[in-house]
Amino acid sequence: NVDPTLLRAPHVTLTPATCSRCTVEFFPSLLPTTSPCHRTSLLSPSNPSRILVLFFLLLLLLLFLLLIPHFSPFLSSLERKHQIHSYKYSKKNEKGKKKKKRERMGRPNSLAFVASVVAAAIVFLCSSAPADAKLKTTYYERTCPRLQEIVSRVVTDKQITNPTTAAGTLRLFFHDCFVGGCDASVLMATNAFHRSERDADINLSLPGDAFDAVVRAKTNLELECPGVVSCADILALATRDLVSMVGGPFYPVRLGRKDSVVSDPGAVEANLPRANTSMSQIISLFASKRFTVQEMVALTGAHTLGFAHCKEFAERIYNYNGGGSAAFDPSMNPRYAQALQKACANYMKDSTMAAFNDITTPGKFDNAYFQNLGRGLGLLASDHALLADERTRPFVELYAANQSAFFADFAHAMEKLSVYGVKTGRKGEVRRRCDLPNNSL
Image (tube, rainbow, N blue to C red):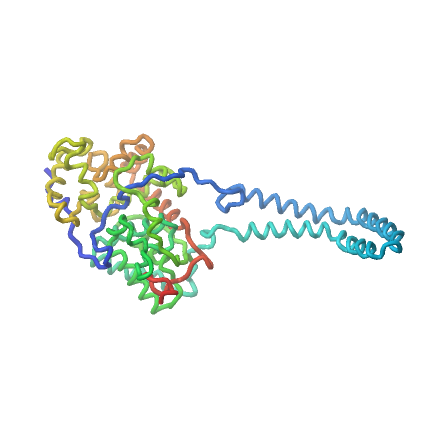
């Protein structure tokens, strides 16, 4: 029998006003997306054809430069004939003479003009490099050399004090990146003039410990190198360090992100998953952000950490499909479902009641989450759907049998996620406070 006390997640008191609940699942649910296919223009930085266009223009410019000497005598001959013709009629029309002279002055530069247009096009293509191409791991090597040391120290202390910090920060990072890119917009607080992403219903349960970890790191960095390190970079580094700290893979984090100057709560719902949605909708949402099915499954493996509120899976353990108060989802392990019923018995009165996503190793990042799915121990409906759907089942089975494969794919997917929609240059700023844009200080 499963002891309900082993399922029940600890009650944690958290700090931010709108985020004072316990950590919940990494992918709470999903809304449909209207565009599963992401289309790009020919000159889009993400389109492979862009390289061919650039190569063609370079070749065209080279041909112009090579052919100019061969065409010069011919053009000179034409020009002399034109001058003789113009002279004959110059006395008849002085105004016409000036017009012809202007034509003569412009004609010899025609090839140079075409070449300059081609060169300008090449400069445009080169300058439109994707923002993530400007990121590098050594971005702060000179401006803030102790960055990694400071972030690691701060998040280590926070994780030791509050063991749910790793799971919470991982979820916070996902919610930030999937809504407008990894730009720390989710960290901005509501003020008297407008609401922020934190106010969206799905973000109300974001854990205060995760926000606190980033704020503490930012405070320390402002003392070390003021106005240099962005909150978006701090969140990306903190997430990587915390995942590694609890047993997960270590992966490189490229730096140089800028912080967003806006935080729109209206953009949240359509970009984040919700509870009981079909696997087709989940796949479509990730595909709209250029993630493959395998990358989606690997990222969902983050459910190996953290816990979910009882209200998120109550329909699976109580009155399933109207089958009575004791009925539960038949895909669940019966003993597991019954233990959850006991653990969440008072969830209607206490909305903070929660259960661990992974009941075997809840505080460790490993592949137990995928192994549990095959035993009927998936907590959320979306968890069970991973195993039930033929498009995702092969990856679930692979990761359940091979933790190294899961770690490698998770690390790759996190690297890809960490550069999604980043802002660089003048498209953002380095906030002095993570919860406020600089123009509000």
